Image (cartoon, rainbow, N blue to C red):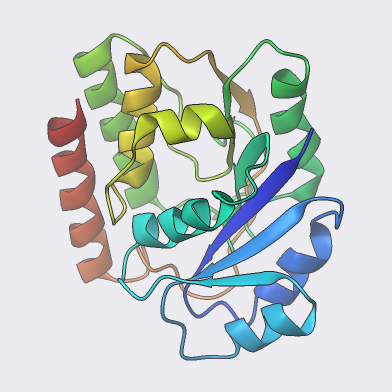
Length: 222
């Protein structure tokens, strides 16, 4: 099973070395840079992984740039892996196995039980609960989490036609997965305290912007 790992990055020079060292080199790795002004790009190039530029600011834009770069040589599975060192690499096989065994099309990491203390802010927890509730209201499917660590068949990902450029990308993805009838599985994964300041929960402005985009996405794509 050919796996491509997409790592959306914005100024993650402190975390990125450990992140890249943890991912098995048998997988294709793409750092999707969203306009970093630190050494993130240099670090990625030094270890020999692909760098994809996404000049339009936004989490969704960064991931979409990575997906577009896969079109010429598509993998079987795409993994989304945050560049802030919050992902436990030991959990990667957990996400891939249901797809490899043929009983899932998309596997989402559920952080609600195994997250380290302090790894999720109160704002993040509340935002996740609100987003999953709204998705349930729109689709009848009850998700447990909106975690960023996820794996999906490339064909299913392309079929979604994802367009959201910001933090609504995960919401759009989970809504469209239900609409397309994909076999969705959520499995417990760990969540570590991130390295550096969060782009969302690190500032009041980031929280407000992310909250607005998540609510808008629930309405727009539901």
